[in-house]
Amino acid sequence: MMIGLLGLFVKLSLFSLIAFGGVNALLPTLYDISVNQEKWIDADTFIHYFAIAQAAPGPNLLTVTLIGWHAFGLTGALLATLAVCWPSCILIFYLQRVLTNLRHIRWKKTIEYSAGALAVGLVLASAWQIAERINGNAMAYALTIFSIVFVLVSRKHPLYLIGLGALLGVLGFI
Image (tube, rainbow, N blue to C red):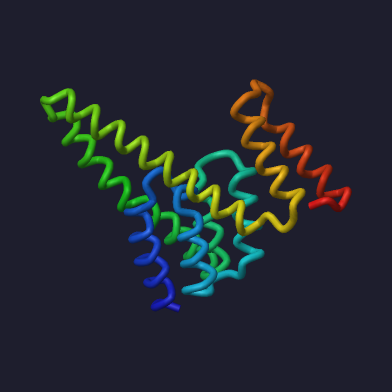
């Protein structure tokens, strides 16, 4: 049990250092660690925990907390949450100090824009990989493409998309 908790803490701490843009930016990597490598949970449970984390208010790291809870109970949940938070918090603390003391505005803007582009790119790549894994038929792919276009061109609330997805699921199309 102790070795398992230590492994959970170390793996998720290292994961946190590369999760630029949050947990969702590297969701496929988290999937690979928790389902394929460590076998803390199975694929369906991972998808369910991700859905719960997205539906719940608050930060997206709830997926990690649920994985820790599933694998090692309350201690695992607390340790997994800590493991994902502490490395990035320390890294951001020192990065912010460097940026604050940086005298060249051009360098500062370059770093800020690069970090933003990296985060957006990782989130988009993650979304693409998730879509590939969960879309089981042509209707699911069509809903994914429609959702992207809907969000980009419409000012309507995306909650309508959840309703549409639920309706298509109830009707057996996806």
